[in-house]
Amino acid sequence: MSIRVSQPAINLREKLTEVDSPPIGSHGSEMMNSSTTKESFDLVKAGRKNMVINGDFQIAQRATTATGLSGNYWAYNSVDRWALGMSGAGTWTASQDSDVPDGYGFTKSWKLDCTTADAAVDAGDYFLLEQKIESNRMAHLCWGTKRAKPATLSFWVKSSVTGDCNAMFHADNFNVTRIINQTFTIHNANEWEFKTMTFTAPGPENSWTTDNTTGIRLWLWFKAGTTWTAGTGTRNYWRDNAGNQQAPGTTINIASSTDNNLLITGVQLEEGYNATPFDYKSYADQLHDCQRYFVRMNGSTGGLSTNDGAIATLANWTDTAAYGPIFMPVEMRTPPALGSYSQLKYYSAGQTFTPTGNEVAFTGAANDRVEIRLNSMTNMTQGNAGWLRVDNTNGYIDYNSEL
Image 1 (cartoon, rainbow, N blue to C red):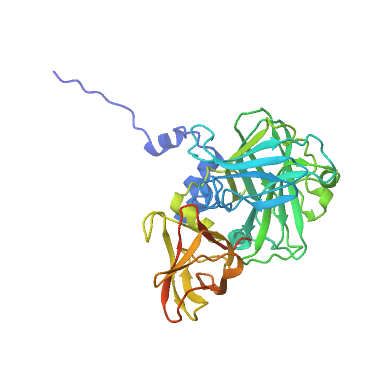
Image 2 (image 1 turned 120 degrees about the vertical axis):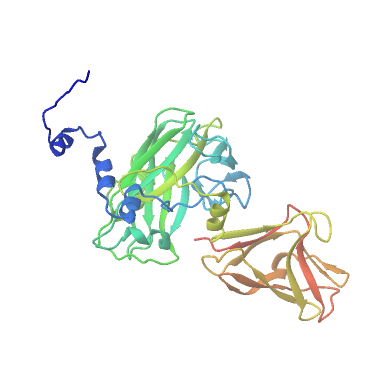
């Protein structure tokens, strides 16, 4: 027996319009309506978006630990691209550390540990972390034009002291130096906290120069006296630089006790109104970016003797001076200057010369190489060649193109 079933005719097109759409939100709608790959790419801010270099503190060419930092101090000391600035803030140790927020993919942080306290907050006191960002890295923000774009700063911070801190841009590349800042708060002691803030776009009232000089100095304040806090200017508003406008609202004193420490990681500065996931780079890529500004050549195992590392082959132009080129691993920001050096030796035809002080000099430099000269040599013969080497793994020679 067969059964015949009949259904009334339906309009499939009308039924499809009645199907509920999934809750995708406004951003999802933008993604679905994007007509090109570039539009989708721009919406999620994919790719190399972070203007901060070494924001996850993977690279520490100078040292993994620097101790005894005190006084009116402003210098690079451990992790690459980050300087510590302080006055009236006691004594500190700076180090690359493995304490990081759990489950976010970070492996390193920058730790500042107070070893001698300064509980008083005198007028000129300050303690801040700095990264200078090259203007070339910020060109896409179109600052100094009618199409200037905002920038969002984000980072993870852990402090043993609670209170209000300050994040500031000190913009050097306008024709008049300008600043903008916002406060952020450490709510809980000894816990990792995520901070994010968006800085408004500067208008075209001041021209901006895009080149290889400093675009902005990113400053994170963790102690500030009235010299820096007494101003009454509106925060998150671009204005001409004034000292008393640089850290308004800062109440924290990270230097108040030797029990205090501060850790930071995941620092990101990107175009737009929102903080997006951190722009992770491989160690090799991060090192490459850092070496645009600073290169350290260390000793290595093997070579002429144990722990010996070759730097260059030189020619004895006279019996007291040797010359030769050294090639950089990357093209640096500017032709590098000679930084410090330690435990260099020059070997030529069975003779050894150990230079000190200004007996090592650069006679010329380009972005990708230098010509090095050894002066005041002894026991050498004109016309011979020789090897310039670092004769210990603790030895080094530095090339500096820092902002």
